[in-house]
Length: 134
Image (cartoon, rainbow, N blue to C red; front, top):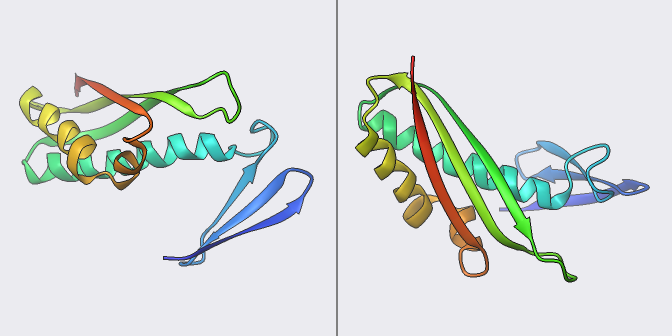
């Protein structure tokens, strides 16, 4: 897997994936685009959500939505790394069983989500969920 990041002016950088997709990043606190660290949170949420949705679908749960709210806490010293990240999953669907959601979230966090597994050694990652009947 390859990627490229190109400085496009001021504090803006254009990332291009090997598949040709682009993503603008803003090193100036995310004023014009997500900052690189905001993108870490988004990537973690996306990676985990992919797993959770896939596992729930394979478990024949009738889900109609999956949203994850991610809250990252950074240390006060430079470099301002994440110390803790919390993922709050909101699963919507009909007759979705709590045991299946709990299992899906745990499997994503502990076994499948590559982003979470890369961060796990240095960042405390926690998660919880709610199920909204629809």
